[in-house]
Length: 256
Image (cartoon, rainbow, N blue to C red; front, side, top):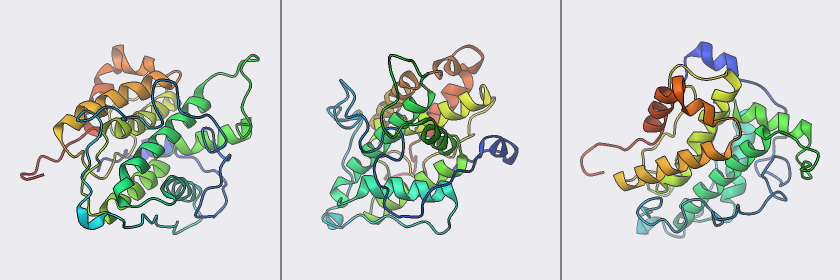
């Protein structure tokens, strides 16, 4: 797992106040319940319709039917509470054979949140209900916080591990989530000088073909996060490509 140098973490870490419920009630963050539906051309979840490129089922037969449970927060730290509530919401009612769906729902929520947080407000395009300036600023504090991303990735890894799976099975969704972290850090700091500012996923991708899907998801997240594309070009191109490569990592161990 990569983590940011402490000095950089302090630059972008930010607190925010939330409730302590383990289940997130809709409408409390941009892109949440009561917000937008699926984006045109993307289906309900990123990665649908991309067999071999984005998705691959690796849930062992013995885990089928096993309910997915999300660890509640151990503290009242706002980023941990929000991460737990978000992962619990997208996992509600799911069993292990639908772990990939949990991953895709989570990536859609995070991307929609980044879209809403960073898009400029225009008179002809007012905020939707639940996306007030206060709510957007609160969510902005979460998605630019390394602690929030660590908590999200940790709980997502725990979901897969509880289903006896040792790798992520949807490259597109992993790429989208990783790009939202990269874009948020880049926008907030005015560009990064090295990869690793945001913690990456604890588990590798399942296979090399899913690496391609992860790259596609990374590019999709960049395109849909306003203000991010400038941090993929010119003087930032090297760190962008390095971040993409590291976030879309594959376990090279024999037999995996």
